[in-house]
Length: 344
Image (tube, rainbow, N blue to C red; front, side, top):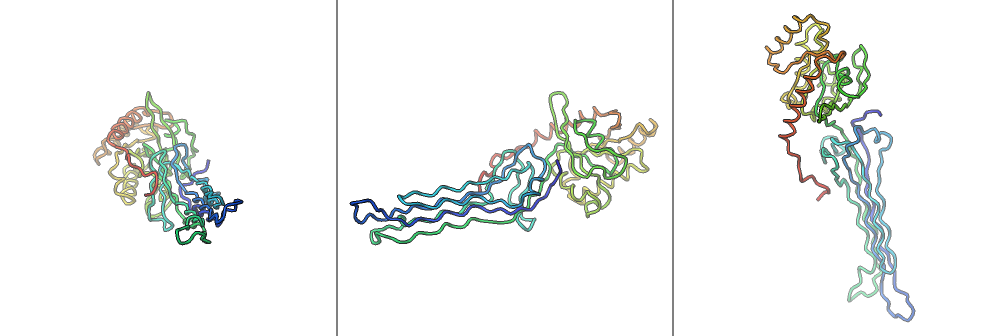
């Protein structure tokens, strides 16, 4: 399935049905009076967050969504049927914005949450509604009220427990393949990963989700490379796992490059819990690997793990530390209980 994290669509709620102008015509009933029913209410437009989606690709092929019109009123005081509502299903973590792309309508960050984006139009009154003591035979029936319409942006921020960050070819996809059943593309050239990949890691009696994000480069926060499109996904992650190619010329410079891009994009990212995994240590002498780890500790990196993602060496300590950090993070988060099911 292709990955798409932004889509612009048009939505319209249903128009209200027209009221009916009708009079009683039963035999032997003189001055029967009006009996035109009201029109039915138009359908609403809802959005619902579902847990089994992780892309907005469906909204690339269909961009117009319209709820049904309410039924017209009929004689014998019969009210028209309400129009059928429609529900847009989106992945958990999708944000809904106005047409300007900046005004947030709702953040669908809870699985099962449902929100009314547009209300359907009210049905028009039939002539029976206008009967009074002074007007016994009103000849007025109203048209239904039109529904609302607008263009909106759907912007997905993946919700994952762990976000993999690092320069291209650091070994993020190899690590994800080693710890989960996900099979991302792996090759020896930069930007092999063009779209975020999700993997579920199961260890003992717990599990968590890892997001492999396309490699960042210097000035990614300003639009260079692919990183500017996917930096937003790191905002939802509870912890960052920074994969570094320990065999490159200057691993510490690579680490600082990524940290600087995270800080420029959103200072909140700099404060997230972080683990550093020195990948490809099988290519280094043991003394060189120990010296590199010591240098990282000198610049303030406390949780650092030498690993070999290709051979799965040193993977389990990383998984255990991620589990411990995620468990403590989940305990400190209280999910909101007053998520709006409808607009007031």
